[in-house]
Image 1 (cartoon, rainbow, N blue to C red):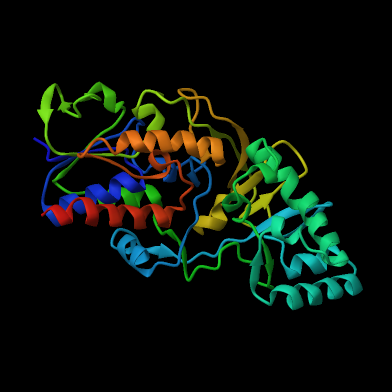
Image 2: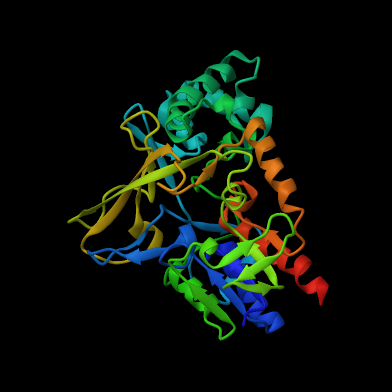
Length: 385
């Protein structure tokens, strides 16, 4: 009945399913545990008619034209450039911390001096990780680094991750650098925007093909059996010889054989206000105030016109398997070693393909998931033709 099975209807699974259906003309079954497609990018209209992102804000951006062009087959775009403010000492200033932030936080003579030193040391339009800036011998730059670390990074990181910046993998702290520029945009990629009619509609268009069948509200273990000794598969109790693409948590797939891989999860509080606008930017970060990390107002992201507005506040929390959603892998040496044990397990199966954030225990942006999925399709499916 089906040539291949895909577990998970997020970006990784849906892209590969679309490629199988359209490029190979083969039938694919997508098994999705949730009651909707689109994974964490899923969006819907709330009771007040505002288009919200149910799993927190998703802003699409990429440097890769082929990824943008591929998704453009399934959506038009609202060309949106995201800006973020952070509340520091009661002021709302641009984040990442940049030259504009510098001049809003310090007296002019001090800001001018620090700006000059930053440009002399690193050059203009450069991004510097905060932990690298803290290593400077220059007294003024060290003062600036400590100020930014204390006011911007430390509190936010403790709330978001439950650990200090030094305990995180450098690729995580480096995602929000000090930006020696007057560019207030959160991303500088050449392709930025939001699906004009929402992410869910993009996924509906992508999966609208007679070769694709989607089964919602189903844990794949209900219909797919894996013999971990022989590698044999059964689908609906019948031997299955096709490929299986798995995009879920890799530790769950192997029944936590090597222990649970830790993640951070999120809890969301959606609030609607009877006013056109709630805040001065799409997202406002609260590194030191309140228990939530940030608030996002969706109308900035979607350009929707409405007399009311909806925001979401994000509260970071520990991930508990089976109780909440895993969002961010906690990357450090111990956790990577545990993941490596699972990755080695996965290599024993010729017809099983593990791809995506959860399956690879990797923090991917959406565009990188799409790029990786297109690459995996080319390597695992086309080369076998």
